[in-house]
Length: 473
Ligand SMILES: *[C@@H]1O[C@H](CO)[C@@H](O)[C@H](O)[C@H]1NC(C)=O
Ligand SMILES: *[C@@H]1O[C@H](CO)[C@@H](O)[C@H](O)[C@H]1NC(C)=O
Ligand SMILES: *[C@@H]1O[C@H](CO)[C@@H](O)[C@H](O)[C@H]1NC(C)=O
Ligand SMILES: *[C@@H]1O[C@H](CO)[C@@H](O)[C@H](O)[C@H]1NC(C)=O
Ligand SMILES: [Zn+2]
Picture 1: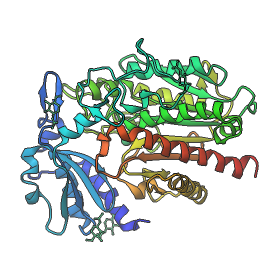
Picture 2: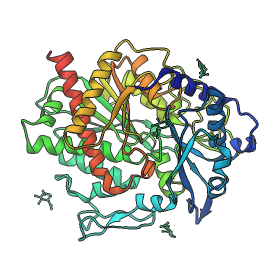
Picture 3: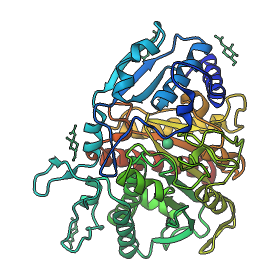
Picture 4: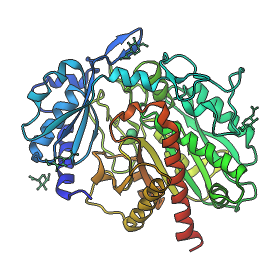
């Protein structure tokens, strides 16, 4: 576990962020779009951009918050923990990095050319050559199993899971799943995105399962660039259905008998489209926030629990001016509390998991502060360790569990904090999926299946833990 002083330092850094100070870089940058990105043909390019990891564990409060400010202004902070901060920098800034960081912090380059990873994240498998991938334009349609553009959804071997798919393909695949498993799976809409796209949910439960089964709600894609969230949420849903059919006495069959599993694979469809077609590093939604230049609310700072408005519309963590300003968070929260027209709510979900990347963490509330400890912390920790163990047992990588505020630099207005405190969903988590920084957000497509398999193992274990603890103790 992480020392509490370190956590306090991080909290300090967050506060400092809200009050921009003068430093080596012009603070006005904070209110303009990231000028370091070159556009080519309407698509942002990251040629020669680097990602650096800075070990700041020995820095004082003050130097940490100052460094965070500098990096946030000069580049794009990917992740910060009490030990390290990962930051994406344009070549001009990367060249002067040593002059920006204090002597007692060690900096390591973890990505030498971000464009190479962006290209890799868009690659498609080469038909007929197992394991081979070829670079592709973001606008090209990934391969399908059938000439008519469909996939064989009765098998997990479908090529769908071999590439990151554009939104229309995701929708077609999910519709095909509903067609193939009509007894078990149904879909409904619970709202619309800022640009008017439907917000879709997919609920799986055995026709012969327990009536009034408690709901496990899984959401992903709040942050547009974290592509492996939606990809592995869809893999998880698909795996439950295929495994139920192939093994009527297996784990999936038990989970779908005792629970209704509802998956919202793409809570930020506008951002997902934008991150593919224009800007691979896009994180927020695409709503007009009244600024002249910058668009978008960071969905995972916009939930209505311990919410804090922010001033910098161009910031990647812009939380808006009021809670649930984003139609996506408003609709999701409304579903949590009231259900939807086609799926009215008579009681709250039993579990809530918000999938992000990266870092390999499975975290429980609270995110906004370490000073408030959830009454269920001990149980949440035990179940979280069970999730990590289940992933390890199937040969997956190490995941760490703990309280969100201690594990990463996170913010107020977090989804799992809301689900726990307001939704009163006892088993609320946020997960950071693969990896630990080699590829970061740019996870290559050959890691979709392994990450999906982590999610299947981990979330099945969580459901069974809840069953053993609360339902049939
Ligand atoms: C860092 O700041 C926090 C409060 O912001 C304080 O509690 C802590 O003692 C400080 N740590 C150091 C090493 O100065
Ligand atoms: C960061 O540095 C500290 C002390 O210098 C060291 O103990 C720790 O292992 C380093 N952490 C990482 C992730 O490199
Ligand atoms: C990435 O792809 C673009 C266009 O497909 C190409 O021009 C560029 O050279 C590639 N960059 C790297 C580093 O592979
Ligand atoms: C789909 O995959 C299954 C399992 O591999 C196979 O048995 C079936 O023939 C495939 N269906 C089609 C239409 O190719
Ligand atoms: Zn995220």
